[in-house]
Length: 284
Ligand code: PMP
Image 1: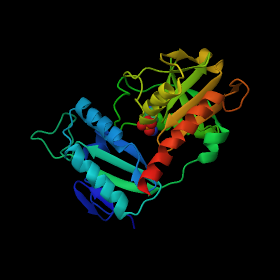
Image 2 (image 1 turned 180 degrees about the horizontal axis):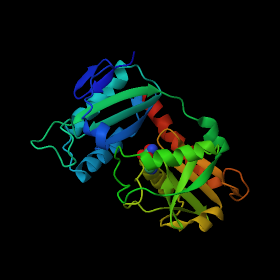
Image 3 (image 1 turned 30 degrees about the vertical axis):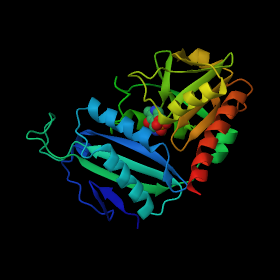
């Protein structure tokens, strides 16, 4: 049975989490999902930087220095002999009598991490998928990776019921992101994505894609676009950890361009895959 990280200890999975853990009762906590390739966490430093930012934004004291958390996660992957999959890391504000305000006196945060073996959905990356549109009913701090995911859960469920890979979210006419991924469109050979403000999570994959576009000489506009513009785009794709880059061929009834994965999307995906290959090489 896989081990977990519980605060600073690598231990058996069966652990006691109090019913008054604030993560359990309020969703009062933050998390990260990190991909693992060839036995090594991928873009771990970037994920931990985002974790640190999330902690600061919700006034949560990280239980450990980032370096220590990093070491513990690397150890967990090793102990579990994980080759390909994910690490899930969560930190709640801790356990205290149930009152909405922060516990006083302060309590220790509860940090938990576990790993799960998982293969990449590689055919979907090459073949593309369909998405559905759903209203973005989330709060106004979507930039923080908090445990509060009920609107995302409802949106994703709606997508699954329609055999769609993702629910693309919109506030009014503006496309923000998707229930668990970022959304891009290509128009006049330029890549558009919503700016990294309070309306979206600044995905680690998103950040890599923007860097790759730069490297490839593809022009990028971090500028909001609307539903109509997206449906008339040359290409649409989504990005997320483990999903990587998935071409969207259809949004509900609307086929995007010719209904095939676009050239710019394929180019970015090709370059993105090289990032893993570099990791695999550096391991051997
Ligand atoms: N937006 C949302 C709402 C997400 O939950 C996620 C993560 N699954 C992303 C975007 C993509 O972020 P990342 O590339 O860091 O996985």
